[in-house]
Amino acid sequence: MDAALPPLTISTLYLVATPIGNLEDITLRALRVLRECDVVAAEDTRHSGQLLKHFGISKPMLSYFQFNEARRSEEIIERLRRGEKVALVTDAGSPGISDPGERVVKAAVAAGFRVEAVTGPCALVAGLTASGLATDEFHFVGFLPHKSGQRRNKLESLRTTAGTLVFYESPYRIEKLLGELNEVYPDRDVVLARELTKRFEEFLRGKPAALLEIAAKRSLKGEFVVLVGGAEPARKKTGSEILP
Ligand code: SAM
Image (cartoon, rainbow, N blue to C red; front, side, top):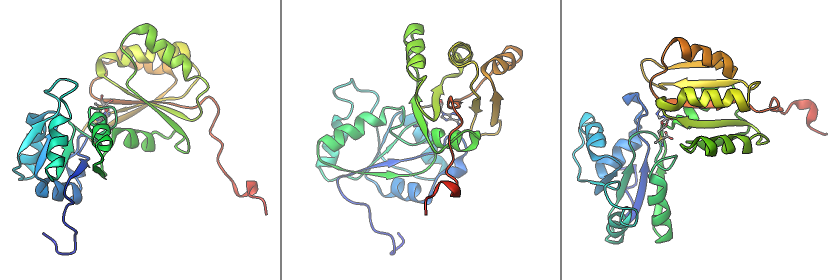
């Protein structure tokens, strides 16, 4: 271990961000934490096991997804109590954003344990920053509910929300979402950020109707972050607004 780097802290839950597609996006710190922790808690041990193997890391793993709701975080908390350093990873990206990581963090904080974010890839940030839409103000929605009525209500409720709206959506519902956006937000600029950091990454930009036309011509596959521009162009601060 590099003598300049402090050792991991006992009884700490490390939220380790992992690549959302491009394995080069793993950070040096993520690798060190994964190497030096006592156990890796993973959403899917088989999936994350492949990632560890790719980086030549062999570590005990536990699944925090195989248990029922109440027991899900219990084993992790128990290990923290014993002084272990636990690295938590999800299938991809930053644990805690629209994934079961959130529940574990809440349980760890409630039990009084230290939680540290080992920052790195996050689909929300990648999609938003490269979208070309306003980034000075945004609202992260994550996944919409599955039921049509609830989806519609949620979209309606966001009408007056300032800034860019950011959604996660499964490829199975991407056309459905475009149809809904066409009804609720026909005049807004929409960006589909597809397969971020991967070989077939692309950004499809246009009004909902134009994107629906594209979806009708070719099936849209892969993973998506969907971004919807604010109702009004976000006001940028200029020098003239600064009072002497
Ligand atoms: N915690 C992760 C994060 O924030 O990076 C996201 C976990 S969530 C269960 C998975 C969703 O993130 C996908 O359904 C998709 O909407 C989005 N996503 C993940 N990887 C992506 C990628 N490479 N390109 C576009 N969207 C992605």
